Image 1: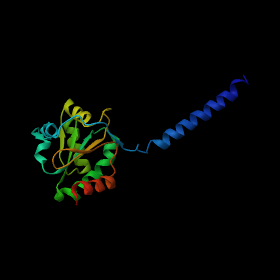
Image 2: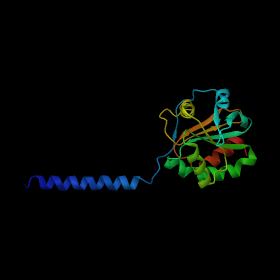
Image 3: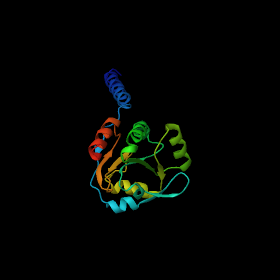
Image 4: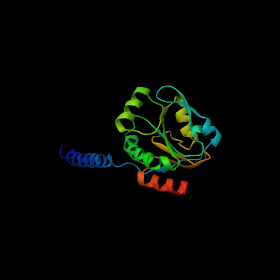
Length: 181
């Protein structure tokens, strides 16, 4: 009986340490990662079709000539919820300087609409089926994780593709560099 007591104590300490590390890390977002190679042309990116909240067909091509920030997200995605208020601020700050944000989701339209209202999203939130995540993968998101943000220049070329939370200050600096403003 005495032989298992020290082992039980060590096991209990190890379990407590693991739980402590898990609790401490729950709130820390992983750092953003650069994504993999892009396997899609600017023309194909601009031609990709989605629908808005009313079911009307939309494409990124309507923003030709603007720098476009495409954010792949979902209503169930906690990091997406964390980064979107920064995107709302940046859309307001950059809209008159040739920048357009667009959120793309493969999600329930009613949930997307409610989510957009709740966070006061001031940019289009479009929907699609499997083509949303297919485009995300072709834009370098090999693992299909969210959030995934892609920065397109005024000609529709990929300037940057980032997986994970895109901090407001970092994206603000990046937009200044891409637009020259």
